[in-house]
Length: 144
Picture 1 (cartoon, rainbow, N blue to C red):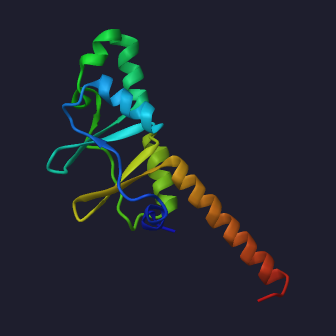
Picture 2 (picture 1 turned 45 degrees about the vertical axis):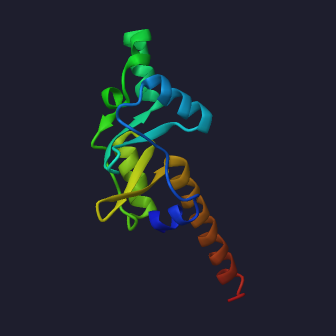
Picture 3 (picture 1 turned 30 degrees about the vertical axis):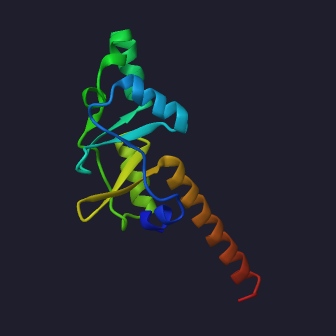
């Protein structure tokens, strides 16, 4: 299974904020949408970073109230690792595990087309495993 299949089963689009958005605004978006990260995208559609709740909390711990006036560009992880629609679920799991992050932007022909979370990837892997088990049960049971 590939990330293309995961994206096909998700609502189209992705949530992004502009680099100049204040962190107070980003926090509102994260809370309202009940998500853990946003992509940081320019008005031209260029992916320039990703900003997570963890990033914000780390700055809050060291800089306290000053954090709220900072911009998404100041706190984001610039040039995030990306995948393509043909990236397999296993490859995505490896990328996310090795990189210690929970969100992976998906880019096709230089254009951002979506984002998958570790939850999306794990769910796809579980579904894939359940399908394989059911196929094996059917085969072993002679119902082919």
